[in-house]
Amino acid sequence: MSLKKQTIQGIFWSAIQNWGGQTGSLIVFLILARLLTPEAFGLVALANVFINFMQIFLEQGFAQVLIQRENIDEQHINTAFWTQIILGIILTIISWLTANQIANYFKISQLAPILQCFSILFFINSLIQIQIALLKRNFAFKVTAMRTLLGITIGGIIGVVMSFLGYGVWSIVGQQLSYEIVGVFVLWNASDWRPKLQFSWSHLADLMNFSLNLLGFQLVNFFNQRTDNLLIGYFLGEVALGYYAIAHRILQVMTQLLIGTLNQVALPTFSRLQSDSKRFIEAFYRATQLTSIFAFPVFFAVIILAPELVITLFGEKWHNAIPIMQILSFAGILRSISFYQRSAFMALGQPLLNFKLGLINAIFNLIACGVAVQWGIRAVAVAYVISDYLVFPFSQWLLSQLISIKFKTYLAQFLAPVICTSIMVLTLLFTQKILTYYLNPSGRLVICSMIGIVVYSLTLAKLFPTLFKQIWAFATLLRPSMK
Image (tube, rainbow, N blue to C red; front, side, top):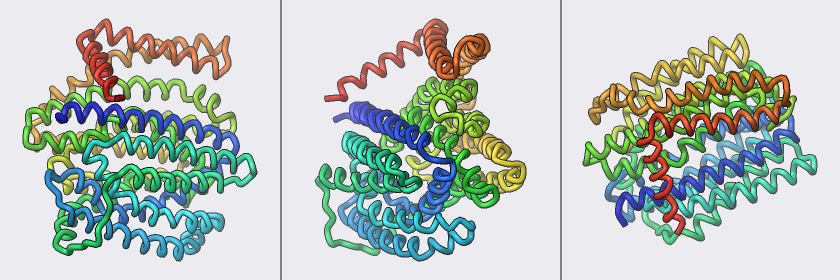
């Protein structure tokens, strides 16, 4: 199968995984948000900070190495797998033993048993990381999509049932554990690869030469992504973190829906084009433009319609999350186009640049959020967004030095979405103001959303007909991938 067909098929199943998975998880999330308290979400958010930190040491960047390398042998794969198993066991033990100390440090006793339950996730995830990497390397996104959908369905049912039975915060814990366990069964049943009792120190060293830089990037990226959660959890408490977590979760869902599909396919596709700079640049431009066409109007619509969105989906008790969601949406706009920088650096064999950029961003975030936390969660959100915008131009400049991206050509990719989004925003502001006198928040959300979609689509079709036809043709190409 040609790279083009593999990419199109990969995009289709990646879209199924992202759109189906995120939609399913969002439905479960909305149900749990109405049944549980901000404190419950804050506790799990804080526990996930530490679990995600230790997860970095489990992954070691091996999965990305196996995807990025043009040629790998069986000893690379087996060495990576057994290294993951050993690390999974070690991290499970460490997480269990340190849970009480972490809870005491944050002065939240309920945190300890949650961390201990989550500790088993390290061993569970050690069983599937290499399987996922091999499937993605071979563009077998259909399997990973099935894993996500089944995991979310079964985990969601368990979480919702537990919440109705009064288990509180343990409903979310049960949901997350169920999702990962289902994933193990699906992936091992679908994959033909089985590990052999092989381990090579020389192959491990070869993997580590690449993955250490990536590990460094993942560590600094963790602090870049999680500094705000840590500071809010420590200084402002789990309730404040619960409000922040809800807003941040919506940002994550939208980001995954809008860019997750293309971003999953970007690394293997860019990696196959690393020796053809012209096609590489064209693919980068196309991915960036395609994402911005969908992301810009969505995030700006959320900024405008956040009050209606939060009250309709979560209820009045989450009202404090509205300004946080509006602020973080500005970060979503930038992230929708900056994700491809990371994939490009990885595909070009430059993980060290990702590490350096992540370190700069992490330092900016730590300083900005550390200063801002004394003024509350809104100030932390603003600081978080500003930090991202300060680093972005520098990272884009570095990429342009590697693949000769022209800055004017890059900016030209955003001309259509910026113009069409501006017209949509003006229409939404006017419509929202008029409908305030006649409809409740739910009614305003539905009507404004429909009007926004129609106005944006018609504007794009009328002002940029060629681009509109290209997008339509691209969507049509995905249909045969269902077979």
